[in-house]
Image (spheres, rainbow, N blue to C red):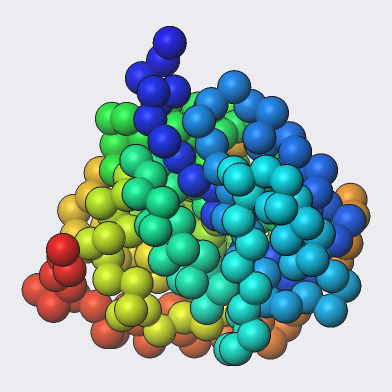
Amino acid sequence: MKNSQKRKAVVMIPTYNERENIEDLITEILALDMDLSVVVADDNSPDGTGAIVQKMAESDDRVHALIRKKRRGRGAGGIDGFKETLKYSPDFVVEMDGDFSHQPKHIPALLETCVDYDLVIGSRFVKGGKDQDRNLVRRIITFFVRSFIRHKFRIPVRDVSSGFRCFKREVLEEIDLDDLISVNPSIVLEILYKAHLLDFTIKEVPIEFIDRTRGKTKLNFLILLDTLIMALLFKKRYTKDNVKRSA
Ligand SMILES: Nc1nc2c(ncn2[C@@H]2O[C@H](COP(=O)(O)OP(=O)(O)O)[C@@H](O)[C@H]2O)c(=O)[nH]1
Ligand SMILES: [Mg+2]
């Protein structure tokens, strides 16, 4: 038995309108031969995603539905989702999207590597990683956003915007989830940046990112702009001296 398999991990999935994906995704995650449970942080999706998860939770105590009614957003939902996972005292917390872009088959490698590192990023841009071809406009935009951010933040990570990752519980406890300013997807970078300033060890493992085939992306120009503005704000907000472990 591998090291990570003896330990308990909770998978946290923020969702908004993932009705076509969520049940199959949870089923695939739970079919992995590991001690996993799942927390879905759903923003009261109009398409009924939350109800699907609640129904699964009734018959499987590894499934937990957190239905949020206030302050919708990928970031706000993720923060509450993380807080919920900590209630189950996991050794590890895996974060992933609910649209199959992040494939459950990569979870074992994330967990295994997280035995030796505090934070493990599922990365498209290390050897062996893949980013499925998306439309040219989106690739150009994200290329520039990522280059800008890597340059500005100087984090030794190639895939700074990857939301497929695994934390040792201590990282989430010490990062102070009540002291984060992102409401939207910039949360991914904000948490990574804080973890970096707190000197947690970070490792990337390759993943193959595939485009969603069901449901719609929530990314749009406004969200992208929000991400850039928030990034500039928290770059100013946090320094090595003022970011302290909250434990
Ligand atoms: N809780 C919550 N989850 C969200 C929200 N917006 C997006 N998500 C989820 O965040 C993940 C990534 O979103 P997605 O639209 O696929 O963005 P993309 O992968 O950048 O195209 C998916 O699981 C979404 O369902 C939101 O407002 N609240
Ligand atoms: Mg997606």
